[in-house]
Image 1 (spheres, rainbow, N blue to C red):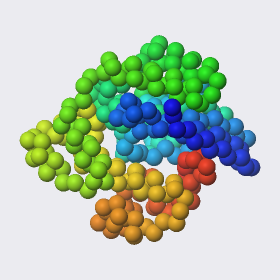
Image 2 (cartoon, rainbow, N blue to C red):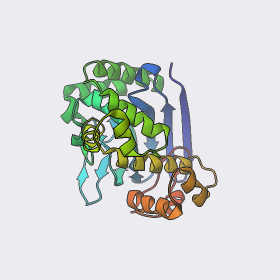
Image 3 (cartoon, rainbow, N blue to C red):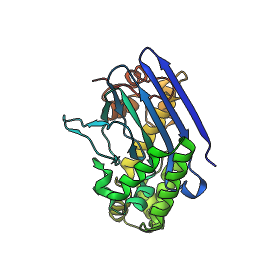
Length: 285
């Protein structure tokens, strides 16, 4: 059984429903979490999508989202899309209505599910039908016909478990290194990781390039940023200098530097654009 938490919002800006769920134990190494979404807004809605340590799979059974990159490109993808690991934000927009399921995959889970060298998915958005073909269409049709979120999560579970059975094995050393980076909150020396694995620094970077999508040092940096964003989402007061030290930044200036690279502005600007009730972040554009 899934643990499902449904969050609803209604105000002058419109309404949305977010169904948040954790995966079953068999999928936990592959799937970080699920978020089902349904929105009805009086006007188009544009959100800033932040980089993080998850590969984002979007399954769409409503009007298609527009994906806008940072150089002005606009794409739509029937059935959905996959956003690989990145170090820049992007923007999504819908015409006032959206309905779908977001699956936040671990990088190693994405490797199992898509069977590609992960650098081929990094820094880009790829149409799901380009990766899974007719399977993607059939999955989305099943999700659209399901009566509720619990049924949709069960359908997604079954599909992903079956898909993972056909996927390539993950290198045990890379898995250990990723888990070590996560356990330490990104505060681990990469040369030490390589030495403990019996690899050269260059070989470890190559392995991460193939199976994760980013080198270990850059993954660790994203992890620190991701945890800072989660703190903002929690809604409580934030003491930036204390948070910077807690997350392993040298000082608040280094935290601010990462936020400017990953969001386009300081942490306080992102905090002001946070939407209530699990709504994400409004675009500043």
